[in-house]
Image (cartoon, rainbow, N blue to C red):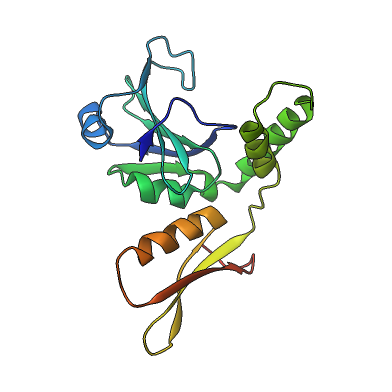
Length: 194
């Protein structure tokens, strides 16, 4: 993972954690990249923030509330399982976007409203417009299946996730282990549970 200065586009609030302390956060991510002493930014209390991008393109903001000890995770697309797999944090998950579908329409509406205000003549960077289009078009019912075929040509589902980028990242991770098995990604039926 590489350190970045901001997430490009909308930040999707994904996951809330409890049971973590500042020392655990520093041990996992190093010194914070930013701090908010007034509680006026993303959460209503003083906080520390870390920002990262992984080779698969996932961009994540990790915010640690200095008073509550709660951790808030934001990212560039709504892929909660993908975020959790990369972060590999101990602690208790209190809330996940993919388990709270009533929030999806709020995020989609925000992306659509911002896109409508970004006129072609504006100075909004192309990558931000691209992210907003991805967010506005996000299909929360879409499912992607990571498949495996072993030496005996037996095929099996490894995982079902809600984002193609997440599926391709998991495929690359599995292929990096050097097994002789073949992995691929395919679209799954929307009714398939994650």
